[in-house]
Length: 465
Image (cartoon, rainbow, N blue to C red; front, side, top):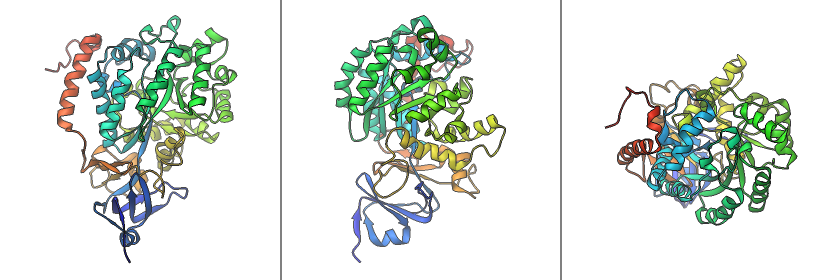
């Protein structure tokens, strides 16, 4: 029988499909044509049907769908470790906001490259970058360029903030919503590619006026864009909205018609039962950031209650400034353990539940469940290979449990996005990693000195020469 030519054949590994049946194919294969999966099945079958000039021998490895990080701030890779012990809004105003404002073009590009590189090393194939509100557009352009240069799939969120000084928000980020949206109408079109899509990212409800929130809602509906917003990360959110509008955050936003299935609410730690009910009514999606929530000491989101109510819950790292990494493998383990601790019940989470959040949940959260989140015919060829032959992972008795609870980035050997191999044998294909890391270290120190954030470091602490 004449075999059909394909662009890429990954064969011999155990395929964790994440399809509706959660099928696992021992000695399976994935055939890729262009950006799409052409076939998934037993290796012995696909090898007789398809021929490829490029075949990856996956024997002994697991083939997983790419992980989807539904919330981060890539520029924060340059502020790791700064401001430890500060409360959330102290940290934002003292570290994150001034760093974002002071960032130069090259620094913005390098910080995004650094975060994207780490993403590839942990099997993450899609990243939603929630950029802060900026008076200039070069940071968005540089993040988009980094996505393009790495080949990473990205959602580029336009940060929006125009008020809130009465609640001690930093005015360095303020910009009228109409002005920002007018610019984004052209900029978003210019930056959009098959792998990059724009989104709207109002930073926080009490940082936007009511007319601004209403305009954001109309703009997103007209353009068919995702809205993502920080919601109820701390109690201050509800307190500020009560002071400004006489209602808590989520009920107020329902009243003005803000909520919908195209809204991705981030954090959702301080939730009331009424808030969950509102989300269910409007099909709102949730981005859960367990490592960041623990790092800042804000609490644990009621994830079990939200899932049991029928909400889509995805996983995310948050920015490296409030996490210190972009490692979705670490995020999965922390999510699984945090909610067992919260419930004081070892059965409160399962490895399958956590993997679902990181793949299928992420795809649904960004409106891409038709093309991402599982390894199935017709979906985008976003996947990674996991080699368990490492002391941390062996023995493997349950591949999903191994990935969630016993994995590290050194096990991720290959990462593929839209059919392109971006990480091969543990090394990025599009960048000199050693040179990039060296330049990132130098640039981050320069930014800290210029923004004045270096004074938050211990007086007798490490100084990079």
